[in-house]
Image (cartoon, rainbow, N blue to C red; front, side, top):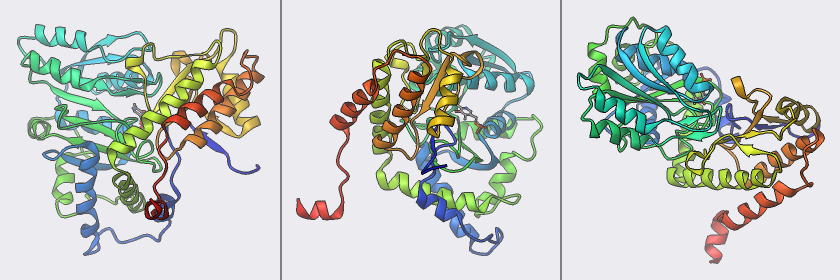
Length: 401
Ligand SMILES: *Cc1c(COP(=O)(O)O)cnc(C)c1O
């Protein structure tokens, strides 16, 4: 292998050197008298990424899928009616989990390329006068299709119907990368994972929970043990865990939070918007390619899913990029297999790295027979990045100004 290999999948994402170094340390005593001094502020700071002041956060060993399960088993009862929608692999899997855990799921199927059907949710909530629906689920950013949904619109639908259902949001590929406002949007359970916007290895299932959902937890009777909120709360309050926590990941999380706050969350969101826009500018130039997201209002700033031109197998594009150009692109999941490939543009990335991703994708597309002129998409991305990227303000530049 010559030089670097390149990772442009929508998770796991690239780990910044600072974070990687922070995790390279000897094992430590998770019951040490001063370990709690590290954990209490870490959890308090994690709340800021979810944008909640009144809720609380949970850090479980696991991944996003584990956090999904924790959210359901801690707050609902088997047989509870819930409202969900499916429009990609991840929203589909969440429905599948809810059914397997014994919930009575009203699942709305939406064409892939669109997102949460807020109008349908509004109609169903308004019609549910008896308040049988206990929870409403929304996948904020469907990573399989590159579709972002409007969570505030779902809160509006709940409020307009005067409906008390809990609002569950899968923010695994959005939180820490694009705008997410737990408190302002009235989200009750928000799920994230360490290996996407948090720029860490997989291994942590992250969860933020509102006061209302914590009250529901008091009444919930679904069996739940390893992921129990109550056990976690009892020990977290003094900075400890009910079982061995992955201390290196927590040390890494400390640094990734410092990096997010150092840049400013709004500025992180804005950078993802610039990166996503540049990638979309390139895709618009690729003859025969188009986004799976079928309207600008669904465009995701963290991942683009791209239909390969007619007659070209997207799997071949991905394999060529990997073997010939040392570049990992995301695959087409479930019914998009062979039809689409993905470019992840979240986490520790900058425009020049993405020009590399686009360049590899373009070469692999041409190798597969796509009618794209060399550099056509990359040129469009370059211009988009050139026009929108602010200069990095160094201390010497600040002094000179
Ligand atoms: C990655 C992802 C998940 C699954 O998370 P794991 O960490 O792989 O368990 C769930 N939902 C979305 C939207 C994702 O992007």
